[in-house]
Amino acid sequence: MKPMGPIPPWFGAENGMLLIGGCGAASLVDEAGDTPLFAYDMNIIQAQVRRFRDAMPAAVHLHYAVKANPFAPLLARMALQVDGFDIASGGELEMALEAGMAPERISFAGPGKRNDELSAAIFAGATINLESEGEARRALAAADAIGKRPRLAIRVNPDFDLKGSGMRMGGGAKPFGVDTDRAAALARTVIDAGADWRGWHIFAGSQNLDPLAIIETQAATIALAARLSDEVGASPPLVNLGGGFGLAYFPGDERLDIRPIGVVLDTALEERADILHDSGFAIELGRWLVGEGGVYLTRVVDVKVSQGETFVVVDGGLHHQLAASGNFGTVVRRNYPIALANRFGAAPAEEPVTVVGCLCTPIDRLGDKVALPPVEEGDLIAIFLAGAYGASASPTAFLGHPGPRELLLG
Ligand SMILES: *Cc1c(COP(=O)(O)O)cnc(C)c1O
Image (cartoon, rainbow, N blue to C red; front, top):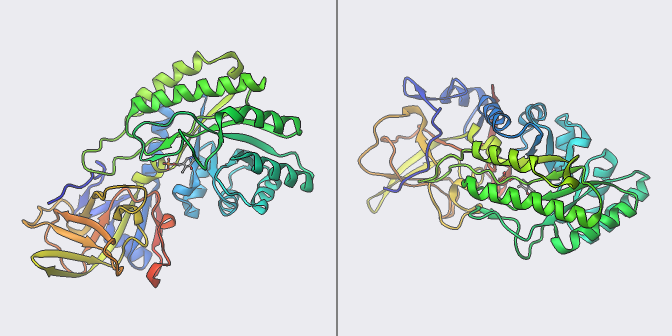
């Protein structure tokens, strides 16, 4: 048997049926029409937003990174919950506007922004987080062509990284942002060109479960923002401190306690340099906000034995939930929390089973030698922590199976 990540503690059952947002998993599948299904519980997501507000200084704005989950009904609800959206493409710009987010509260980061995407963002009035000198030149030209003053921030490739992150986005050579030694000069260039300079975007890493590492990185980020602003000789309207709050996906992981982060950040902001006195601050989060609120439900199509090992074959797979297969940003495959939804909490069988998806590739493995109650054809398997980087971050066209259904609850 191999261990699995912890099932979030609030999930329970009624008559053995897993409840999601107060509804039984099987009735949710009926409501959606079929499996595979992503069910998102807005109450869990809202509780997480409240946790952020309770822990963080009131002055710190909360931004949602749309790429974590762009499901339209969820985005529309998120637009009412957070202070801004961070987007990474022209497509996400359209989704953000469609969701009702005010353009001046949208910021657009990410390498490789095409001219048409830059124009669309400037036209809408969103802020562009510039990733390079070349992008700044193209953005200024696009703004000239439209005849609109662009809102431009500088994304900085920090000279430190968030230690122990699942995905490193700073420290060393990176396709993201402008190196620290050229960031102030670029800010000066856009200011001199007449643009509305919005400040700094400094994102040092993602998926981190160590409060001390996050605290250290935030302190370094504030110090860097002050140093660069001094170099520019101007106060930044906004300092985006990045994010990095992680989720407990895997065996041995513990849920991140953000309260100490808020306490230290409060002091750090009180003691900030004069040049940041009038600046606003933001933290941008994706998975931490929405990940725990999602469950992926998939039906057992076949149970088979090969050389003594039992395989549970389901109608979903890595084409919907790539991350649970271990092929999205992880080096070693480990088990996401997984359960038998229609006998939730029942005693596990003596022998572990391996849950595989329906794709014809050996990497389509959703649970490796996991302890589940005895499984039969027609049963429902639940994979937790499926609210972020699921449906939209998986190769849905691979093998021509239907896309997943999605349902927002609460
Ligand atoms: C992906 C991304 C995020 C969100 O990351 P999470 O790990 O989901 O919180 C935030 N900011 C930027 C710039 C990103 O690229």
